[in-house]
Image (cartoon, rainbow, N blue to C red; front, side, top):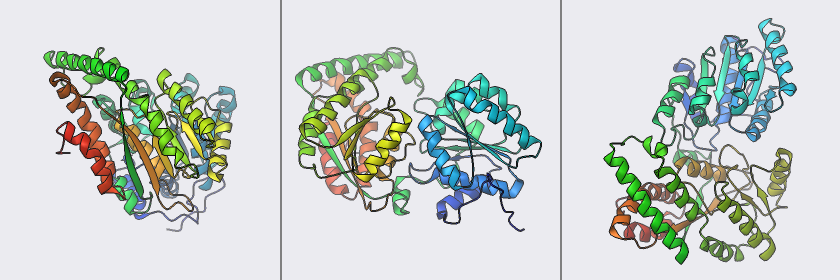
Length: 462
C-alpha cells in the first residue's frame, strides 16, 4: 500500500528520525495489543518520540483524526508542543485561561467531524482535563481519536481516573514508573483504562547499553546528624514503630494502609523532612564544591517544597553563589515558564554553572545538558529517584558521561526496639541505592561506600 502524504498539521515521522529497535518493538506491541497499553520505559529513553511514532502510524493505517495528550504540568505541555511540531503537528495548547483555547478547540473539532480539517492535536494538563470546560468538549471527539497519558501514574488518582474519556478507545500510557506508590487500587484502575505494560520494558541498564542514556559515576556522601537532629530522629522512629505495631494489630496488612494510616503518614513525612534538611549536608556541599568551582552543568536537588526544603534552597544558593562564587540560579514551581526557558538556555550555554531545584525537575522536564547532580534530599518514593536519574543521564552534544553525588544520612545508633523499625524502613532505600551503585562506572567504589550502612543494619543480603 502506498503511504499517503500527510497534509500540513497531520502527523508524520521526520525524515531525520531513526527509531531505535526497542522503540520500533514498542510501536508494534501497542498495535498487537489492539490499540491499548502502557509503555514502561526509563526516563530519557524516548517515550515521547515512541508515542508520536504510534500516532503517525495510526494516521497511516486508519486515518486517525484527533490526538489528545494529557500532561501533569504546564511545562510539559510546552515540551510536548516542541516535539509535536517536529512531527508536523500544530497542537492546540489547552490549559489555564479558558478563553484562549475553548473556541479554537470547539471550532476545530467541528471542522474535523465535518471533514473540513484532516487532523487535530490537543495538549492539555491534568488540571484542565477535569475542568467542566474541557469535559464538555469530550463528547464531540470522533471515534478515530487517540489519548496519550504522559507521566500516567498521576492519572490513577480517583478524580483524574474518573475524568478520562471512556468513548476514546485508542489509549496509550507513558511512565518510567506506572505503578502508584502505596496505591494498588489506583494502579489497577490505570491499567484497566490504558492497558497493561507492553514489551519491551526498558530499564536503566537497557537504556545505557543502547546508548539512549549516558554512563555515570556514582558517589554516595555519608552525612551524620547533629545532636538535636539525632534526638528528634530517635523520637520519631520510636513513634513510627508504635504506629506500625498498631497497624499490624489491627490487621492492616495491605500496601495502601501506609498512606491511609492517619498516625503513620505524618510521622514518615516529618522524619523524611528531618533527613532531607540535615544541617551537615550544607557542610558536605561546601567541601564538595570548593574543589569543583570550574565545573558547569550542575544540578542541585533540594527537598519537596516544604518549609525546611525552602530554607535549604536558600542556604544552598547562598553557599554556592555568595560564598563560593559559583554562578547559580533557583528553579522551582514558582519560576514563571518564560523565565524557566531563559534559565535553561543560560544553563546549556554555561552562562549559569548550576541550577538549585525543588521538585519541578522530577517529572518530565528535559534539560539534557545536565552533567553533574548533587542530591541533597529525596523522598522514600522510588518514582522520584528513578525520575531524577533519567534527568541526569540524558544524552547531549559533547556529554560523554554524568556524575551523581548522593547525600545519604547515616542513621544514629538506636536501641533494639527502634533498630528493627529502622532496618525495615532502610531496606527499600538501600536496595535502590545499591542498584544505582551496581550500574555505575565506578560500581566497586560506590558499593564499598554503602557497605558500612549495610553492615550496621545487618542488610548485607541486598
